[in-house]
Length: 231
Image (cartoon, rainbow, N blue to C red; front, top):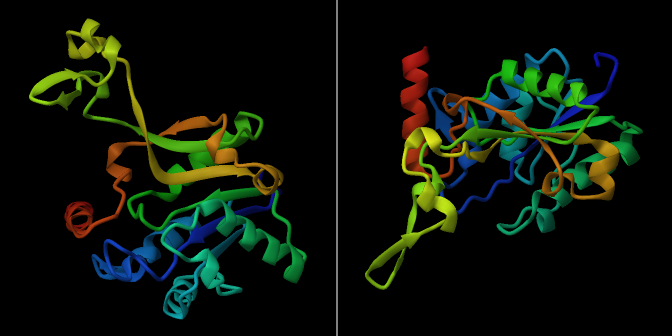
């Protein structure tokens, strides 16, 4: 594992609908993206950390905190509706063509999960290798179980899931997990040929305390409160 080239890719475009300049907005004294870079640098297994961005400001900040920014992402890959897969492929193709660098494994680290620790990153990588490099995606157990949820049709409530009527006690409910956006791991060869994160994948369960996804202003306030509590 330690001899394997493992590339951490951090996608961070400049535009943001919900929070302007979200990826470099200050959180507890540091830009949001800094937390992901710093934890990736502490990993025992990650070989390189590359940030893919279209924004020179993000590039400067990412470099300051120890990541590499060998290119600026094309604007066509930095739109509101741009999927993640072509962004990852563009980064890998650049590294292969311009540097002759071909990592065996890619770890996708989104900068919007700042509470994710290097210990969780390393545990995820270890689990990935123990499962014969099967694609891995991090999840967290949901607190509000959908088996007890309802939908409104007119004025009346109906079960969201038809079989939910048989679950009368909380302890009988199936455990349900949500993708928390913190960690995605796959082989480079799979990433370049298929969409591995939309197929069969190992679920890596993380605590809710590490799973806060920053999307709106109120999420920054929640994260600030957590950092104050643990500092």
